[in-house]
Image (cartoon, rainbow, N blue to C red):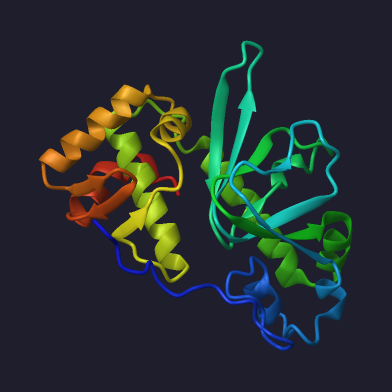
Length: 246
């Protein structure tokens, strides 16, 4: 099965417009700054990429100096325990910010790796924090990003079933893609079944079994990593116990 284009392709803006996936544009525009007027912020930005799949943006223990906003692609964060087992912490899409969890300890507490071809904007956090003191809107936006990061970390902490966990993952991914102008019902999973299972704290066989059950019940179709949600309301209902805290 060949999927149609997922939606509009992100652009890099121009001298006056922010990139279409800019993680901070809404906050800056709300403060009355366009890209041209915001030289003090624009000079903080370091564009990086495209980086191929498998490239690490940072590794656990690296000194924290910048946060990174994804412009294109998907980034996975993870840690490795003493026995060498990988635990996935999250997935970051265009317009989402990586590295906020490093603010307190001043070192990155996890690894971040590209799952496909990724480009990012790196923002010097000390300079961004200084600028935020002069821009209340930007400061509030940083607080919101921190809050979202905490919510994502605690999203699956409850005693939920495997079906509820996978449904919540798919609904959350659908909402995030839709917010960026992409299809909410047809998309390609850039992460492996193993990565999804690790993130949801489930066995890979369990994830595959739940996918098959949802397909058998007509809730969605799955072709390798290509997913089409056929019954969004049913998936939302299943995910509601997990997502109600968001």
